[in-house]
Length: 182
Image (cartoon, rainbow, N blue to C red):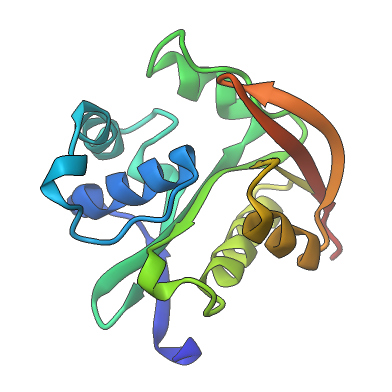
């Protein structure tokens, strides 16, 4: 199964599925696809619109997707810290600064519930780390929700170290850093 997973850059046509995964990452809930009708809301539609546009935090340009048999099963959204202010400004003033300029930032990582615990999240995290190296960043950061044990375990297993507790969007997180080797 591991070899049949393909990681590729997201494309604007991936918006419907990608918006669900982004929502899952930001709400810290695992979703299935397709989303049951009662869960559809304006937030997912806004994420779809931002995803299709260039030059913003949620743009397809910042996302890698994992595919299995031609279906998207997960994604990672990441970007350079020195670009965050510009990417946020394209969305609106409600976004908080989450990274430092000298680090690559993993903003969202999500895998659909049916595909979790199969190494897909780990592979996506490694892709983000490769992007960091390609863009000449030696440090990767992320914020993991304090109560999200599976995520904290994944990041710890991948050598991310908690550096401090923080509050973003009225939620409690642990800021984690990984220094990249050559």
